[in-house]
Structures are given as C-alpha cells and as structure tokens.
Length: 110
Length: 115
Image (cartoon, rainbow over all chains, first blue to last red):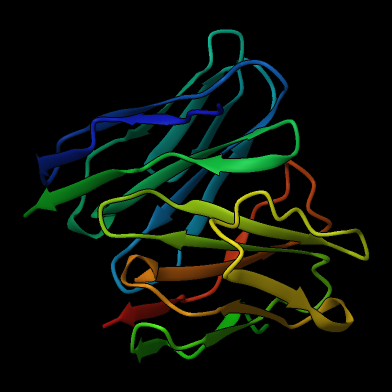
C-alpha cells in the first residue's frame, strides 16, 4: 500500500513567522515529488515538481527540499503572510501514478 | 489560455439517482485525472486517462463509478445509484503527456451532495 504522509495536519502561525512542514513518501519506484497549494474556493496549483535526490527549489519566499533515499521532502515558508494561508499538498509519483497526502492546512494570522 | 473547466460547480441529488460530472481539460494535454476529496480526507485518485491507452481505473471505489473520455478531450464521470458516502468534491486535472515530472492543472471541482 502506497502511503504519503504529511505533518503537521494543521498549523497556525503569526504573520512574519517562518514555518516548515514535512512530506514522507515511499522511496521505492520513486519518480517525482509534487507540491501543490490549495486555497479555499480555488483549484490546487502546482508549486514545485522535484525528481532528483538533493533537489532544492525556490519560488519567492517558499522553498522545498527532497531526499529520495529516505523518502521525505520539506516545504519552507519564510516570513509567512496571511495570503500564504492554504492547504499544502504533497504528492509522490511512484511506479505509475501520483498519490496525494492529506495536506497541511496553514493559517497565518495578521 | 483557458484552464481546466468542470461542470456543474455544485450538484445536489437524491440518493439512488445517477449523476454525470464533466471535465474539459487544457487543450493539448493528453493526460486527464479524476480525484475526489471527501470531508476531512485527502485527494483520492479515481481514474487516469493517457492518450489512447486503456484508462487506469484502479481508484474507482465501486462499479457504480465509471468514466469516459471522448476524442481524447472532454471526460465525463458517471456515478450510478448515488449513495450518501459519494458526497465529496470531485476534481479533474490534466497534464501534458502525463509524465511523472509534469505538473497537474486542476479544475475548480464539482461539489456533489447526495441527500
């Protein structure tokens, strides 16, 4: 059974705080790790797609790292803003399909 | 350019009725996916179409669920004899060629409520 786990399930931070969350995934038959941001009342949008061990990607204040040997990825948000409030989904592509985790729900208070 | 569109955006139906959900993928995307998110759950894979290949139906929860993709473009997800546990947001996504490194583009979803 393929399991993609995310932690924490939810997170409340103050504006300006930096934060990070974790995605763990099976390392066997691994091809790619995706991060998506899902804002309320909108569609999930891709943040990053990473494939190589040691990959590190950055988009503005958000960055992600990938460890394919041990099967985990971290997503970092530097200086959180209220507009960062969303559910962050990771998904692992193993064998032949993308399997999503249950997400980390982030709320940033002004 | 136009993104993935889905219709209807909301559907309320009575238990036992059939429903059809529609997805228009991004033009040129050969891969199309259906997911659903039930209350408090993550995104659950349902079915995957890639070009002219036979679809991967491994995520369909029961034989009441079926999907087709006509002409390699529009897809419909049909749920027969709906049950209350079918209530969920049904999301469609498409990607270019469906490779592992291709990001998926999601539609706005259809919220299905079965009374």
